[in-house]
Length: 159
Image 1 (tube, rainbow, N blue to C red):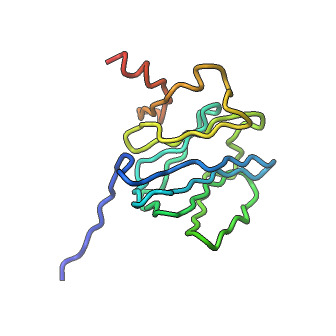
Image 2 (cartoon, helix red, strand yellow):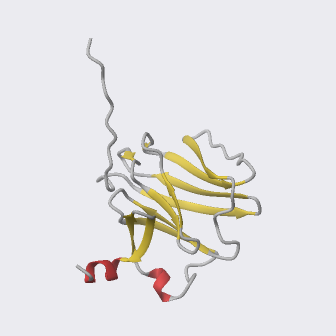
């Protein structure tokens, strides 16, 4: 019998997948970002990144995570474990770090696909977080030092 090898798939947003940041919770020592897939197809998450715009910190999703339709994914940071549960959907909890990530006053969570394109964002406590440049579409650049967030319009203008 031959041995099967699995292959990691890095893909941008698939047609039919609808990934959204539902909320960012920043409650003292417990922080979390909740995502949903309200689409009709599953999305491989290898190469996808969650970023804090204000803190410029990055979470890479596990290569083996497949974000199925109607699934809820919670990325936790901070020191206390979340007690979130919902019997009506598939629920996955991922631990980013035990350190605090999100700014206590305001921040923007951005979801980037494997190509570095912005898929969704969620700002709290309101949409205007850091001036007009915060509202521009962003691109995630991978480099030797890790990641860098740049304005999409500036990235394309340099080419």
